[in-house]
Structure formats: C-alpha cells, structure tokens
View 1 (cartoon, one colour):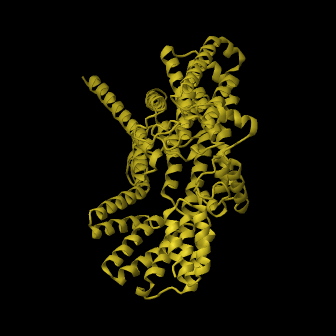
View 2 (tube, one colour):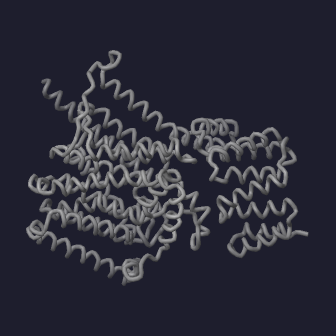
View 3 (cartoon, helix red, strand yellow):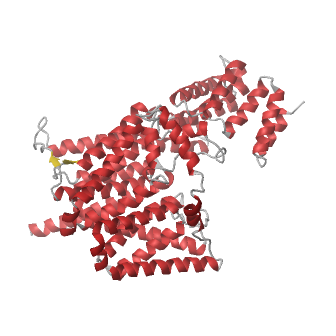
Length: 605
C-alpha cells in the first residue's frame, strides 16, 4: 500500500513539474515578444520552483559552470554598478541564463527526456503556425508579412528559435535514431525555417550540420548515408515546393538575398553598424559602456541610412558584448564557449564510444545560435537564453559523468545554521532572490494598473500606483517621465501651479537618473517654455537653449528633439533660424503633418 502511494506521489510530482515547465515556456515566449517584466519574472519563478523541489543533488564546479557564473556575475555587476543607465530587463537576461542552467542541472534526466519532448512539441506548433502564415498570407494575431513571424517580433528571432529544435532533431535522425515521424518533423521545421527567409537562420543550420559531420567523422556519415540522402532529397523537395508556390504568385519567397550576399557581401548595412560599435568600444575598452547601452551611443553617432531609425542591437552579439561589457565580458563569454567545445573534441572518442547522444545533440543545438549571433542578437531574447542555458547544463552534466575536470563542493549539514535544515535555508535564499528579481515586475504591474485607472478618470489612484512604480524602480527614468506627464496634465487642467511644480521636480529627477534618455528633459523644456510663468523658478532663455542643445548632443537626429529645438528657437526670438530649421525638418519628413504645422506656426507674422 505504501509503495502504491509512493508511486502515485512521484507521478503527481512529475505532472506538477511538467506543468511548471510548460507554463514557464509560455511565459518566456510571451516575454520574448513584448519583454514584459511580469511574464519574464513569472517564467523564472517556475524554473526556480523546479530547482527548489530537487535539492539533494550536490553542486559541482566545472569549467563550464565556473565560466557561466563568472560571465553572469559580471553582467549583474555591470547592470547594478558600472552602467550609467538602468533597465530591468538587463537583470533578467543573466538571471534567465543562470536559472535555466541551474534548473536543468538539478533535473538533467527529466530535461533530457520529458523537457526536450515538450520543447519539440512547442516548436512544432510554432513551425506549423509559421508555415500556415506563409501559405495563406494571413497574419494570425500579428501583422501580415512576406516573411513568417509566428508569435515573435522578427523573422530572424523565429528562425533562431526554430533552429534550437531543428538542429538537434536533425542530428538525432542522422545519427540513426527515430523513424518516419522524426523525419517528417525535420522537414516541417526546415519548411518553417524557409518561411523566415533569414540568412542568419540558414547560416546557423549549416553550422550545426557541419559540426555534426566533423564530430562523428566520415565513417559514421557513410554508415548512415541513406539517412543523409533522405534528408537531402527531402530538403530539396521542400525547396522545390517553395519555389513553385512562389512562382505561382501565391507567396513571396526567394534565395536572392542569400546569393547576393555571397556575391557582393552584406546588403543590409550591417557594416555601418559594426563600425559605430567598434569605434565606441575603443572609448571603454576593458569594462564597456554599460550593458544594453548601445542604443544610446548609436543615437548620437548614427549615419545614413539609419538617421530616422532607432537601433538597440549591433546585430552581432560578440561585438555588442565587447562594446557593452568590454573585453573582460567578451573574454568570459568566449571562455564559456571554449570550455564546451574544447571538452567536446577532447573527449571525442569517448563520446562516440559511449554514444553520449544528449551531449552531441546539445552541442549541435547550441551551435546554430552561436553562429546566428554573428549577424543578429539571440543572446538578448528570453526564450533563446533559457533554452541555451538548458542545453549548456545537459552538456556540462555529460562531461562530469565522463570524469572531466570538476570539483564537488562540500555538502551542507542538515542542521548547519542556527538549527535550520539546509533545505529550508536554500528555499529561503531562492525566495529572497526571486523577490528581488520580482521588484521590476511588480513596478511594471503597478504602472500598468495606474494607467488603467487614469483611463477610467481616476487620477488620484492612477498617480498613486505610478508613484509606487517609481519608488520600486528609482533608477528607471521611464517611470519619472510617466508620472511627470500626469502631474503636468493635471496642473494644466486644474490650473494649479503647485502640480506643475511637482511635474518639474519629477522631470528633473528623471533626467538625472538616466542622462542619455532625453524624454524627461524634453518635457521639462516644454513645461518651462509653455507654462514657465506659473513656475516659481522659471528657466531663462539661456537655460532652455542649454538644455535643448544637450538633448541634441545626445540624440541629434531624433524627430522629437528636432521639433522641440525649432520651438525653442521661436520661443527665444530666433524666428529666422526657427523657420530655417523647420524647413529642413519638413524636407526630411515631407509626409509629416506635425512638421508642416510646426513650420506654419513659426512662420506667423
């Protein structure tokens, strides 16, 4: 009877773990689309729950885990202390990589079996969605596009996510495992990859296949030549179908961009972005300019054809890591990669002899992402970070089982500290960790609820919840801007100078919190320009021009900054110069109604 109850308890626990994992995947997928802190945090909480329910496994230091912890620790230090700016998502990125690694380390067998199956099922549904989008031309919850998006924001992110499933499934089949079902899944995932028309995706898949062929050797390839032939024929058939379907005019698809890149090099102006990042790297060589700060630097130094565009990514994660975290950050990341692939080829004979399939599949799965990172930004996407961390943990566990260099940390006594059990202490530390990581999520929810209250006319509660968000995240300039705008609008509507004073104070604080973000400064300038007479300390013309010139230095090509600059010139009496600048703005944006109205307003007699 006790045995039956124990079996039922184990089965129930497994179902619970499976549920946690599925919901965590959904939350991280949602966060990958909109980078909402709440869903990102919720996904991490569920992964942490999987860790806390399996604490008997001793923690082992290895080259991989040491390099990973060092890299993530550097990112945390950069975000909290070194970077002059702050974004909540910057905390979640290293946390996602580390927590996913820890979760897969605590339950390696479950992740290698059940977890991998769940992920393959999820990526299959996404692949079917992408193929259906391309075949029908319907958006299905997203805007229509010639390239499939599924539930992601760009086709390239979709391609990268598909490769995380396609590469290991393809390797599994080419290693002589699986039958028609696996073969059909491979063709479906490949078809979905083609719908993205992503050159980075194609590069990643080619890199994964190349690693497999090089690693297993010619003899193993020849032994499975029928499967290699079947895959080649299947891929050619899928390519032929896509070409025929596009020839019928039912969809847009071609490989022209791939051939153009091979013949003439990059045609998407990536080299211009790389040159800007390379120039900025020289300014902060060792510790970088701050994690996720490339967008601010790009605003001040961007060149055609990006003058009217805002970019936050270099589209080369290695260069962006070097720019934002310095050569130290890049070194630690490369050390992590070398520790994986160095050991993989060091133990090559043993891996093949012992048929370490999880290790081979994990290495093949990570390779496309590492190569895609040469031309895109997969290491800034929540779901890809989590899956990469899980693959990394599986590979690490396989190396440890093969007796690679590792050091087992001493186990904590069951009553090691103040009479508390070690399990209680670990759970308490995990709760504290997730509470700290939950602060940005709570702030985002608070601000969202405050906005909802404002939309229903409840200004008092709207302001209250926005002030809560600002108090929880005092380094986030966006919350200052939102609260300042509310106080300003209330002051104007109720004709209350004291509320305008509050908005001025909040805009000033927001500008100091993030000196590279100009939204607070622009609102402060507009407030003094339009309602300065109601303020106790009205800014002089010299102050206003000093502020707007500072904003122009930070974002010289920003449309909002240029508009405010024209209005400031008009305000201080430089009417001729204001008209000249307004004409330049209209010439650059002939379709802009606001620019045309601005020219009319400054041209008045």
